[in-house]
Image (tube, rainbow, N blue to C red; front, side, top):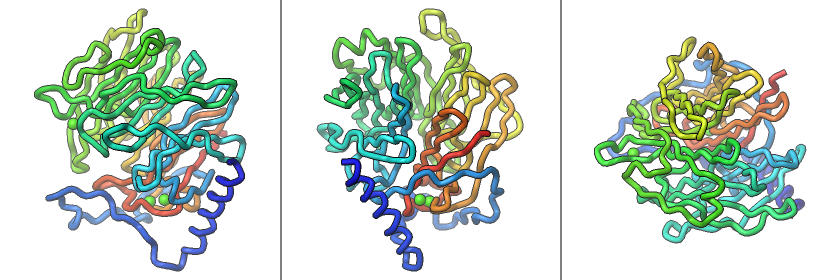
Amino acid sequence: MNSSLTTLLLGGALLAGCQQNQPKAEQPAATQPGDSTATHVPPAADTVATIGQPQLLYTLDEAHNTPDGLALAPDGTIILSVPNLANNAYPAVLLKMTGDSLAPYLTNLPVEPTTQKAAPMDLAFGPDGNLYYAENQYENSKDFKSRLMRVRVENGKPGKVETVVDKFGLANAVVWKGNTLYVTDSQWDLPGNDKGSAIFRFTLAELSKGPIHLQPKTKDPHVLALFTTTVNETNVDNGADGLDYDSQGRLYTGSFGDGKFYRVTLKPDGTLASQETLPLTGKQIPCIDGLVIDRKTDKAYVCNSRQNAIEVIDLKTLAVTTLAQNGDTDGRDGLLDQPAEVLLKGQRLYVSDFDKPERNFVNTRSDAPHTMSYISLK
Ligand SMILES: [Ca+2]
Ligand SMILES: [Ca+2]
Ligand SMILES: [Ca+2]
């Protein structure tokens, strides 16, 4: 398995290199009926400030075209989800990073019965040693087909994969805090609010009992906090996306559609005490995708997907600084190609380059090569 994928990935890298002087098989950014993409002039790469020095971590082939979620495993390796949403002719897979090598972890993910696709996004190991991943079936169906899945891990190896929660709209990020799992749903609409999103809360005990069926278009008992997206010129109404907690156990999420940054304070029993929209200073972030919090410093590393940037939010002062940013790119030099998820391990920030643009994003094309980047924080 390892050698075959290594060959595959190297083959992809070589293929991309050979294609440099040929017409690129690029796909235009997603458009919707009646939009004004034709008159939109995207910012040229050289008009966007280049900040920081992201490095190339991996080059991936077309069969791994949309890298996304990152999870640190108990043994120190990193699991990467590849939902392949830019080109889902290829099945979604989970890969495993060990040192500088990348190998398959799970390649037979169960498809959702009606969409016939698997779509793993963020993922995290639970206190039970099993791996949990959120699914984004929203691009396949708007009819609440997304799920939370559990990979049974036995002796360090992935085994059976099972549905533990179904009927999400767009399950996106997951984070375990003690024996409680928090999950964002970027499309949890309510009657009278089609711009809704939410954070859900599940205890390990509940998840161990059997599948939970959510109640769409309601304030399901598992809903911890609700949000509303203010739709802007990107026309994206996805809300709560990345999710993590600080040194005091307060949760933070950001909205993909409008960049609002939220703090959710919990009662000792894990239920909601309060939620607030935080007034950031230094820079307004228009779009927040994945994020990770360094609880030693209480700094949040946030993917600004729309502007090809990684922002740092100091949670003590709420000041924003830009760690890395660049213009439109195919990613081959390690430059950011629409960062979607980050993971902090030691002094290295791992970055998934999702490369599947929406309208008015700096990134204009899902293009080969498909890439992962890293940023040294030293
Ligand atoms: Ca919606
Ligand atoms: Ca690319
Ligand atoms: Ca690109």
